[in-house]
Image: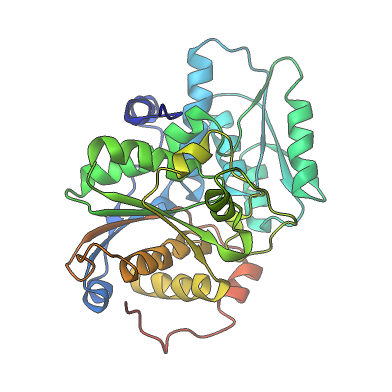
Length: 335
């Protein structure tokens, strides 16, 4: 089966955006490693340009379009936040105008940041309206639409986070990343199969926005009936794409995470790592715990080197209050 992207696409993306994005660090927690009996390595994409991995995909897509001589008078995108900032930043860095369409329930801090990068921000009442409007605007001559995930260059660019991580930490056994539309996981899988073919790659998704999990069970793309208000606001997508879905089908595991567990790992990772991360990032830890707990290969108790992609760090005040409304520190992390 020929997949939409492969490791070569991710390598090319890395060369294209090198020097313009941040080579983000890997951090660890001795205490967490002790409690769980495994070696955890966290890729800090919260320290990336615009505070999220999305900068990688947006810049790769726009840079490649410019390289190919595409006539661009305006760049547009539809996003719930981090991709919006990423496209606004990437367009500005290339001297291009941008218009970003966002649902009205997005994080205020993400909307403000998007405007601060020079973009015109247009709000819609629903995610469906946003998606339809950006598709309509994309028909205008000279307008370049950069989707948040269902685009080969976006997927490849997002995968450069794991490409970097695999050069920073050798012998990774398990890679975990969150799933909204599946772009990050697609790029991660593509480069992992190339550089670390023996490593497992798993995904995490909010139980309250589990369109990808439903799709994987049904072996066809399924959409959410109603928009989700999950704490993992970076994963409120209605459905995965026709390019990301076949990549997700190749994963070694995919796990749904409850709202309580999202808040739990948000609190613990912020405390242990001493960095601000998004709840969407944090839920990947629960996927790891679920995967290790149900592992049937007999190696679940052997220490493994586990890479967790912490995809972003943009959290506004109202979301932060929700995430800290219950104290989870009485329950120490364990398998």
